[in-house]
Image 1 (cartoon, rainbow, N blue to C red):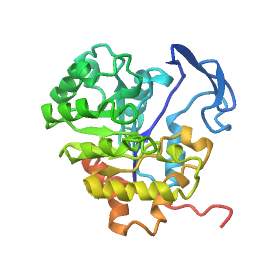
Image 2: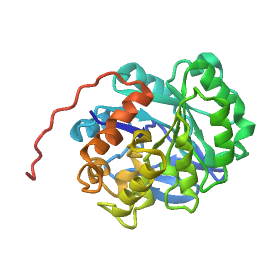
Image 3: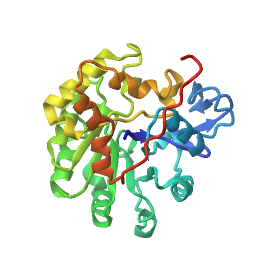
Length: 292
């Protein structure tokens, strides 16, 4: 059973980058603060990144479940994700987006977790955002957080992990593995309730490209630091799919000779099932494709 711990969905992009709007265009492109960028695969024609298309990719790659996180550059997708949860809640967990203002308890209760884009906070001092961590712990929700690059926020994150020892925290982007200081982010997973997910690792090693041998080396280093039981696979769908297919985002791990079968099983699904509380999910059947 494979679980993707880091995907994105949106109905309509309405975010900001450097105080400039991010607006979806056509052909998978977006106006990214004044620069045209290929935000999604070109066949995603209407600018919408829907749950139906994600689930079709998951079925093809035999991925049973997923965790839908959010990104400030896309704007809040809370309302759309609640609709996705109503339709597909058996296969996905969804996060509401923290936007540096208090969230109503009744609103948060509808979601599985809260997403914090640590590197995009106007005030990067996580201790100034203590209230949202306390709220998540009080309501039994997990925190999904992408920390700022390097060690800028690691001390504060350690303090918050100690302050809220029962609060589940998933750190994304594999600690920004290509930036000096990434290992300090991985060390946070030595706290019992803190896990690391690989969402974005193929983006960070995009110049090396598939099968990402340096990414595998980084995973082995992380195993040394915090143990395989603290690591979860994430694809960072759909932005990483502008370079590779969804299937490729996981099978470079599955086909690696540097990881044992037991390690692959934990990384690709078992750890996420435990952390997020997924039930036993069905494994989509393998469909033979036309090139075989």
